[in-house]
Image (cartoon, rainbow, N blue to C red; front, side):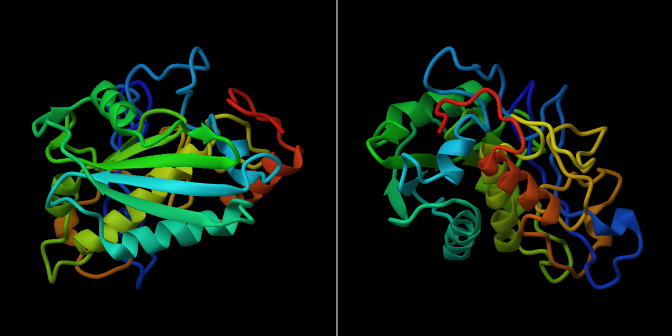
Length: 278
């Protein structure tokens, strides 16, 4: 999700074995509230260093200035992310971001002093209170993920991207979204996909800070892919979790996503609203 006025994240599982009926292929629920998909309310555009989701896309893709990257994960006690989610996120970023000095993950148990409903503004405020350092520090790029107690103000939201360097994942909602039969998809699988999805928004996907030469944005759900095999896919909410017994959620960028990222890095695709340009 990109918070209210941008997007909310909600995951639905897909029946990957059959791949026949679109409703049965639902993987990601990025439920809009107004335009609430995965993005947070009242995103600020370049009026300060926070930026918008996608505002540090080039800083991540390029090694011209930022040769290393740190993923700062701040989590409430009892809300530490799954190791598989951490490993998968690092792998996906390594696949697209040129960081010759490596990508490091820094885990910090944090008391956010808030356990009820969260808004995008809450996420942004708490994140900036607890950041270990500025996102753009020397030759290192810092991106942050919050794993707080409580849920988003829209109960369907599993994750949100609120500015150029910050996302939040709501584990309580993720666990509630777990499949009712044999726990498929599992909460762990859902968390894996939601975390990569939200960081996909920090990478500017889909069409957040650029215009793709390929028509792969879901016209009814801006900021999301129309390809059910992409981790950036918007799954129509007509599918019911109770109808999905087995299946695997998408957890990687598809070719259109990857080509967009490559085009932005090469300069073939113009990029806007950047906090740093090569």
